Image 1 (cartoon, rainbow, N blue to C red):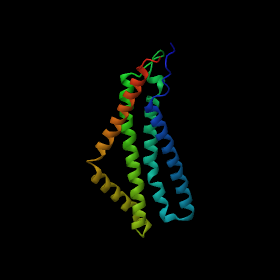
Image 2: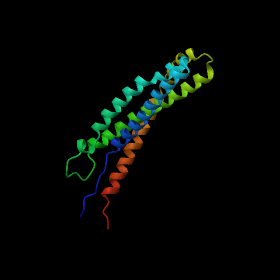
Image 3: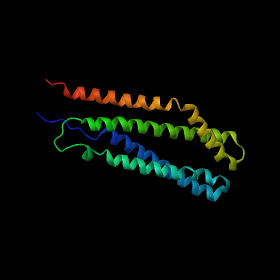
Length: 169
């Protein structure tokens, strides 16, 4: 009987998607900074604000992606997913959810601040205050979102493992 091919771990796929998104946002922020420096100097700092955070996020996600490669987690003759890989997938699902939530909060507060403030020099401060306020308001719920994502990932992996173990006729 032929051994099933496992493919890439879910954690690796999640981190690869996060890396692509962060790379795209980093490119957009750098292009926007350059364009705003040329055409509208008072707002150029707004596009430059997320660049260090996006870069650090990109470095962190790159590290996580390298740690989650199949050749790092699996032996050569492995036919099932190990418990270590399941735990890594579950943990990375929580990390991915937290990063996506913070990114969406940051983008949302930036848009709200842009509609609230007339003076571009004050918009960065207003966006930062709104972001911190939204994090404080959502603080009790953020762990619930992360736990739910981890629970969903664990259920998905258990369902896949049960599906693989069923004998085929």
